[in-house]
Image (cartoon, rainbow, N blue to C red):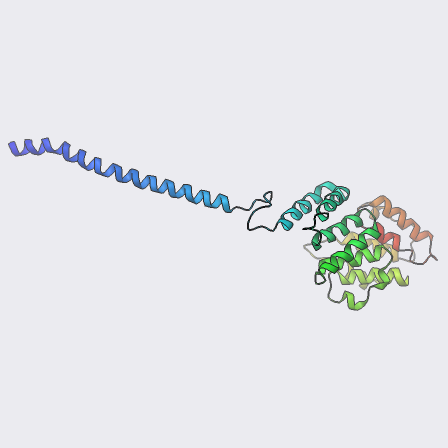
Length: 253
C-alpha cells in the first residue's frame, strides 16, 4: 500500500517534469520554424521582379522603362505613345534602343505620318539589322511612304508576311492586279484564325473588274473605315491614275 501510495504521489511530479521538458522543445521548434518561414518570405519578396523599380539589380533599366511604355501604348493611343517615346529616347542611356524606334515607327504609321514612320523604322533597322519584326515595319513604312518599289525580292526572302508585302509592292508599283492565289497567300486563313478573311475579301472586291462601286459592308468591318472608304472610292473612280491603290494601302490598319 505504501508503495502504491508512493507511486501515486510521484506520478503527478513525473508528469509535470515530462511536460515541462517537452513544452520548451516544442516551443523552440515552433520558433525555429516560424523564423525560417519569415526568412524565406523575406528572401522571396526581395527577389520578386518589380517593373516599377528601375534599380533592380537583375533588371535592365532600359528594358524596364520601355516595357512600361509598350504596355501603356495599347491603351493610350499613338499620340500619347509618341510623347512617351520622345521622352524615353531623349535619355542618352536609352537613345539607341531599337525596340523603341520600331514602336515609334508603328505609332507614326497609325497616325498616317508615313515620312516620320519610315525615318524611325530605318533607325530601328540600323540598330538591329537582324530583327525580322523591324524589317517588316520598315517594308510597311516604305510602301506607305511611296518608297515600296525599292524593296527587292532578296530583301523579302523568308521575311515576316513576305507574301503580303510582295503583293502590295507589285500592285502599287506595276498597277497589275493580283490574282486570287496571290491574295490567298497574302492573307492566309486557318481554322484557328479567320481574321484575314475581311482583308482577303477587300482585295477580291478591288480586283474584280466587273465592280465599280465600293462594297460598304466590307469596308465597315475594317479599322479606319471612313478613310478606307474614301480611298476605295478614289480607286474605282481614277482607273487611269498610276498607283491608284496606294491610298487604299495607306488607309489599311
